[in-house]
Length: 318
Image 1 (tube, rainbow, N blue to C red):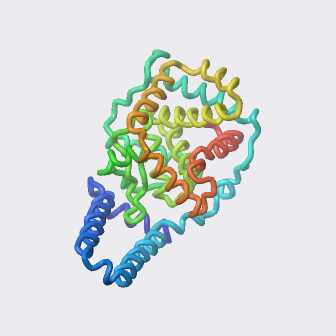
Image 2: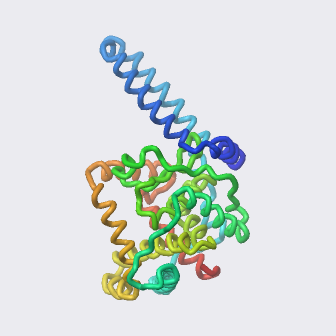
Image 3: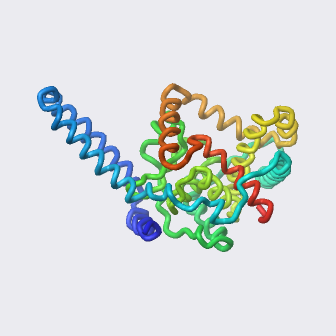
């Protein structure tokens, strides 16, 4: 059911240049605020009816959420679908991390011809949307279930609130539009776009969408988009080593081009200026939301895609 539904929604809404889903959210918020304001005087005397109205409205939204999207949380795991192992050793991770460092350094140098320069993508965000589709066409040749047609990827109208919440993008479950935060540093923008496009295909797991987004980036013919995928994968690997072994982590850092580290610093400084209690609160909420919806690792599931990458690389060239 879902492939037909998502293709229909992308075909209908993909041609509209702005986010219909964000507009619906805005209208919904206005309606909810207006309802509470109009009923403020009768709340105590008619609280049972008001409560029933709230529950009825919420139940309809909950049904639509499941019918249009949330059933995807029960999909067959990608580990099983692609016959990829679920475990790896420290040595496996070390071999993979060194390989990703080599790939990231190589692409960075190809783009800048200077190890000390950070990568600056020369494209507009709309151009990145269109170019990202090429990566999905490439991985579909190897894995047909990643076939993707018809873009419906848009800049969210709520980029600033989304930034304070600590998110680079999201999928609107009611309209199947991929919403991307247009304020984030551009070098990481393609990876976010490809991640949200993976959600559009019905992959609900954050780790699986990171993995699919990574494949779509590195298989793309464009070196800037490749860099976005490799650099993001490397960042997750380094985070893994920082927890596992501080000595190895420091050794690995020394082998990375300064230009790559400058991109990481750029991203770190961007998110730091929006670091408030708001993003911590939303991350705590989303962590519980993921756990309720079949993702037992919660927010940690984003980094679990290292498992997929390490084991996939044993049998496939990246």
